[in-house]
Image (tube, rainbow, N blue to C red; front, side, top):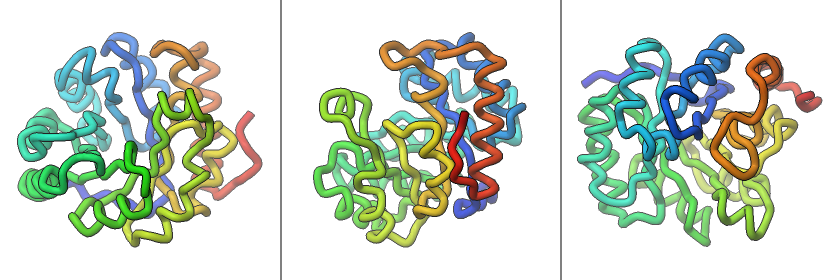
Length: 237
C-alpha cells in the first residue's frame, strides 16, 4: 500500500494531544493547525481514554494532516500497527524496550499498510545502543524520549542524551519530554528536526488538562512554529 509522502528531515512541528477526551482535544487540534502546526499526535492518554476512535475522529476531521498514534507498542506489533493504520494513523510508535521481534513486526505492518514507524528509546538505559537497534530494525524515526515519571523524580531533559542518539543513527530523530518552549527552536540544529509541542504547553504539570486559554496557546504555538521553521534560537515568549 502506498503511503503519504512526508519529508522527515524538514523542520516540522507536531502537537501532542495528551488529553483524555476527544471533546477536550478537538479545540486544541484546531488551535494548533490554525497556528501552523504540521502534525497531530493522538497522545497515549487520549488513546487510553477514547481508544482508536480518537484517531478515526481526527482523520475524518483533518483528512490531509499527518497523524501520529502514540500507543507505545510493547507487544503484538503487527496487530496494533494494523489497527492504528486502519483507524487513519500515518505514524505508529514502538518501544525499544519491547522484544526485537515486536519492533520487526511493527515495521512489517507499517510497510504493508503504508505508514511510518517511530521507535522510542524510553526505558532503555543505553539509549544510543537502543537507537541503533531501532534503526537497524527499520524504523523511520528514532524518538529520544525522557519519560514523564522519570523526569518527575530525577529531572533532566532529552538534551542530556540527544547528541549521542543523533550520532548513533542516520535516520531522523525527535526529542520529547521535559523540554521548555525555549528549547524547541534549537532542536533542528541539534539534529532533531521533528519538534513536538506537548506537556509544557498543552497540559499542566500535574494533570492531563488544558494548561492555558486558547488565545494564549495559539499565540505561543504560532511563535514556536515560526522559530522552528526559521531556525531561530531566541526562545518563545
